[in-house]
Length: 416
Image (cartoon, rainbow, N blue to C red; front, side, top):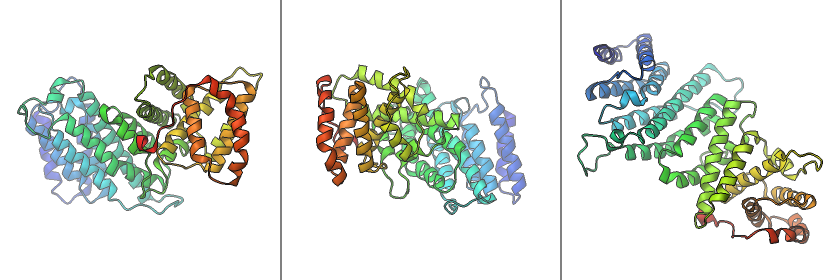
């Protein structure tokens, strides 16, 4: 413990010296110590030592030399472990300063030109810096979730009872949601517009999935916010999550599937919260878990998929499950006014889907059919071609009404 105190003190002195290589080596050593320290042995045994370490990292992240800041961000990711920070009271306010400094440093980087190929060294360095930053932020989110099961971390011992202290797990968790919205998401999405980074997107999606459990009472609001179009970002977040991720990357595909699973269930629960729909949610949960990992396609491919008819002599039900899953994703997106699929083309694809279902005598689950009705309702007035199919569509769908008890689709105000 005397050793780590000496390391922190030395690092503080090194940062005052004008020597980039010395800065980098000092931070690298600190990072390795943080990573290798056994969980069962406390590295920081008193409050002052922990605060000094966090303060040193704040100063290092602010360094104008990106190489030094990059090493500092790696150290931040390493220090955000519960066993490093659990000496009471947990320094949530100090951690907020550290995380905010890290994300602002990242947001202040100059963005590379769109679609520059190949990326130069400066762009690659920025990408690595952003990846390390998001890894650090993900660790902060995981720390908040871990602290939920620790009464000492929740109550933050030695904080005066009934005080309005911000040094609480609740305040820290809400801070994570706010700063994710204001800094993390815009920074990552703007970067993704300019260069592809599967590793970054995997960590980003994993972070968003974790945030659903950081403040459970706010998951519905968080879901709606994630689906909304941001005028500063050319590509809508929801369509990014669904359609631009490469299915050839298993880790990325799993991270994206986990995120979409949480988001869709949250939005559905919000729309159906006045009903006893536990059985329906279980069925939907199973459908999403089963089909989402296989559902990575472009917009044109998704419309083709929706229009396909399963082989009547094949017992494989994967195609129908994928179609139901896709309809739920489109329903969530449209309910949040993210209409990345042209309405005319979507109406036609859904009409083909219903014709196929009728021809084969299939009965989609009620939650899928509600999604279909909602999508048709918002698409049906988009042109002459749609008017031509109205009568045919009504005839086609009449046979479905006897199978379901319908509720009206969620109004926009219920979802946005």
